Image (cartoon, rainbow, N blue to C red; front, side, top):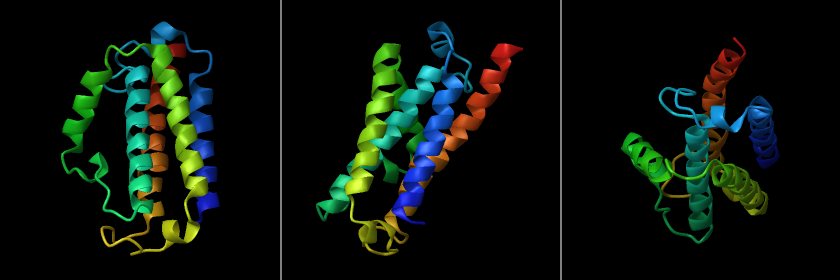
Amino acid sequence: MTRDELLQQLEHTRNELNALLEGVPADALIRPGAYGNWSVKDVLVHISRWEAEIIKVLFQAQQGGKPQSEIFNPEYLKVNDLWHQEAKDRPLERVLEDFSSVHTQLVRRLKDFPEKALITPGNYPWMKHALIDLVKDIAVDHEQEHLEGLKVWRASLSA
């Protein structure tokens, strides 16, 4: 996969998610039950926090060190719970701003990241695979997974 292909997938998934949420009233976005016990707001915080971790990994990789990130924490479910608790009272408007701005920053950092360093497997001693695979897993595949769950929720609003 090339950087341009990754950026296209990121854009496609984000556009699909934004289109799904378009026109949904704010009270529906904060109501629990959109994705398990989570509200849409909770899911957006979750996606943003993991994207922020990717930004951190990319930055630290460019600095030449081994990234210190929750991405490498085997207890990621506990991390999810902690982040959920930290953000439960965050206003929807701020969550929506974060959701947009963190994604914009991720795209910008990916565009600035040297493609060879991104796509070459084993380029970093702390990773067996290409860094782009990690980015795709956390940013594209993870968001797509939540998007599929939110599609079910969105369909239930019309029922």
